[in-house]
Image 1 (cartoon, one colour):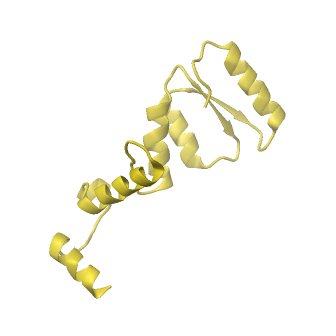
Image 2 (cartoon, rainbow, N blue to C red; image 1 turned 60 degrees about the vertical axis):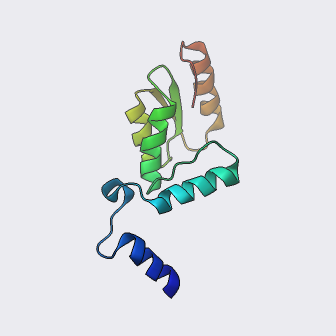
Length: 117
């Protein structure tokens, strides 16, 4: 631990730290993402500082105004915020109500929407 801490101090200095958003991308971020991409056998990986940031960063990147997002009423607020940010049409079904989920999926298929998420 001492050796690792000394190495980190030599490379990054000491003081108040901050998130990647504030401090910028640093070599440990890139090493982690490279290792994750290799492990998952993907072209690349991207790490977020929180689940909230992941939802806001990925949902609007994957979905647009031509799509529909179907959400369980009790899903996490981050998913709702990400869905709203995307501009997609939102449909909500009662918690675990598969019948209502099915009807929302059928509705989405009948519309001109490209994809349902």
